[in-house]
Image (cartoon, rainbow, N blue to C red; front, side, top):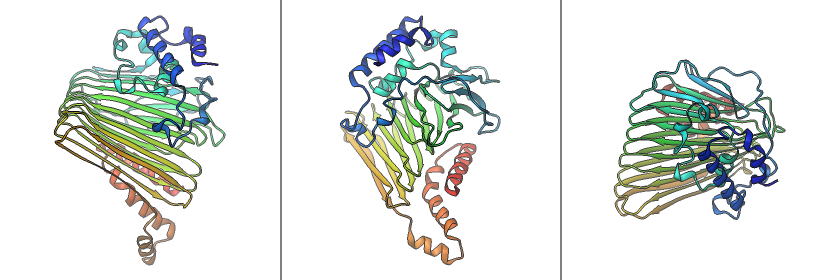
Length: 420
């Protein structure tokens, strides 16, 4: 079945079916995907990642049921919960000036809020997986921060998955000077290697002048699941985004970021950690676009691979003509615990201006045998010594998380993976 035929079959049941502007968005998304289809390895951006595991999963219907909802990750957080891509539990006690609700609900309650904003981040409009998401999405979250609002408590959005295919569509609109901390958590339930559900999530960020967003994404999907997530954002002048991706679960994982710095003083920090075992595959792909001058970007991605795990890092920093006085830095480091583990790293710079400070680098290697010998000679058991060295390799990236509570959470999750 083609996407167009499947979308027409669902059209009447999709949220906001009576909104002409949304119908036009979906129709355009179908047309884009029908032209491109799923990218294969002949497409340079997908050279190292095969999408064969999801070819037969695109139209697998999900269900809203869920098992026990785990407790919040952070104390005293505002939390929204989704089950297999559909809203399960509302957020409560939201402060004035903050809207946090399901996308389907927002299409009913406040469609005027979404019109002209949903699907409008230019960096994500032409991509095939976000187009597929736009055509079929049933729900997701909407976070709107009025200008000047500072949300003191963290916001958690939990996506529980156990079966089928889901297409969460998320939209963050941060007004001028607004501040918030968000944890986006993807968690598999009751699923091992045979749990082959598929999540294709898209999060759009529009940050007005002076807004400050901290977004932390934790991916703990079932070990047999496929997870593709796209973050598409645009930052106006003096806006700041701190984004951190922790990838632990899934069999096939792709975390893709497209970020445009559109104003002077904009600042994007995109960091991440990937920890893989068995035959897990994780692809981190980042495109940073310095549209104008006078802004800053930093990237630091580090991973630890064991067994036959395969990781990919491909990052491109583009500096547009006349975007003078920018800084763009990119770093990828990977620790290989097995001679069968593999990393493909492809950092790239495209500089079309002359007054810039840019750097990129990539390293891959094994545990330091000298350091391991030193620790063991001091009476430290080998397993503990190895964990100490792995922690030292990762900690520099974790320490860049500015929120103390989230930093502690990430440290605990990484330690649990190492001890398993």
